Length: 183
Image (cartoon, rainbow, N blue to C red; front, side, top):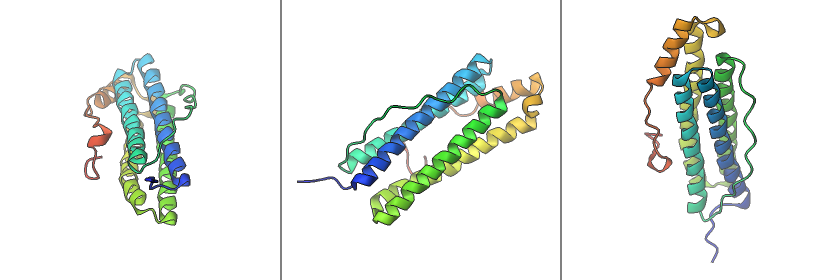
């Protein structure tokens, strides 16, 4: 008896997104290492936590595909981009990555709608909401850096920004504990 409740195309698209989330984790890990090397331990810690959150997102996709009778496929992960040239470039990279991910999420929502796969459409609504939060977070990073003076910020402003990001909550929930109200 066939128990798979996903089309082949949807199973592949969800697996691709799982891998995209793993790639995002690597990108943010790479940015965190760059920030750590530059002496921005607070910013690095923030980016490391964000990398873990992206990994948790990949696990949500993996579990969903498995729960729908499919088998997600882990693919080779592309190398992260080269180190950013500045904090502005780093934070712009975070924002660009989130916007690209939002576009990919919307394509999955469209696909689920076209296939009338209501379970997947419903599952994807959590990610639609999550991407609003992710893009807002990335815009906030850019705004905070701009207020601090951007690439011309004083050492004191950068120190304060670094400490502010270091002191943001460190509670990255596990993917299986997330809900629509608490992503």
